[in-house]
Length: 267
Image (cartoon, rainbow, N blue to C red; front, side, top):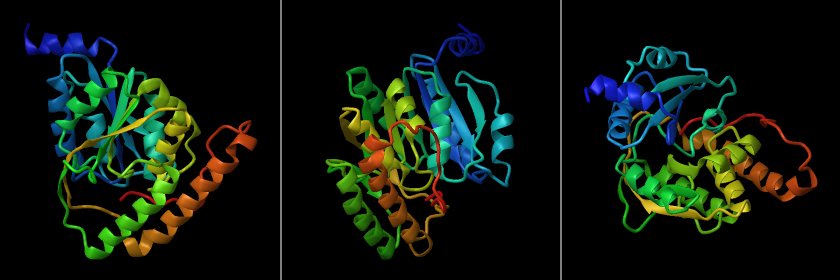
C-alpha cells in the first residue's frame, strides 16, 4: 500500500495511543521534537496521535503546530490560557479520547524507545508507567549545576511523602490508562512544576500501582527552571498538594479547577 494511503488509513481510525506535549515558547525545540516523536509513532503498528498544548506562548509555537504537515500521525493544537506546565498537561489529557495516553516534554530529553516499554506494560494491565532517572538501569547525562542537583534531591525527599515508592516523580515521560488519566486530570489542581506529584498521588489514591521504568535521558539546553526563582514556589505547591489531599474527602463535593496563586511554570 502506498505511504499516503497508509497514512489516510491510520488517521481515519481512532488512535490507540495519544501523546500530549505541553509547550511554552518552544519554537526552537518543538519542530525537532515533533519530528522525532512522529517518526517514532509512525513506526508503531496501530493508529496514534499527538496533541500539543500551547500555554500562552508569545513566539511561533502555536503556528508551528497549525502548519504542521499532514502525515500518518495527526498533530493537533490545544490552547491553554492558564499559565503553568501542570495546567497545560491537564488541558491536553482532558482532550484525549484514546484507551492509552501519555505526555512528554518538547525537548524529547527521554529517549523515545521507552515508549515501546511503557506501552507494552500498559497492555499487560499496568495503569501508570513513568520514566525514572533514578532507576538503577537508567542512563542519565546531567549537566545541571551542583545547586540544582541538591535541590532535586530535596524535592524528591519531600515528594516521597506524598507519593510513596516512586523514586522520580518529575521525569517528563509518563503514560497511563486513558480513562484513569482523564479522571485524575479532571481533579488536578496544581498548575505548576509540582503537578506531577499530585497527578501520581491521585492515581495511587484510586488504587493504581505506579510502575517505574529505566530511561535514557539527556539534559537538553533551554530549561527555564531556576532554583533561586522557583524553589519557594515549589515548596508552596507541595504544601498545597498535601493539604488538598488530606482535606479533600471532606470537600469532595467541590469538583472543578481552582488554580492557586503564583503557579511555578516550566522546568
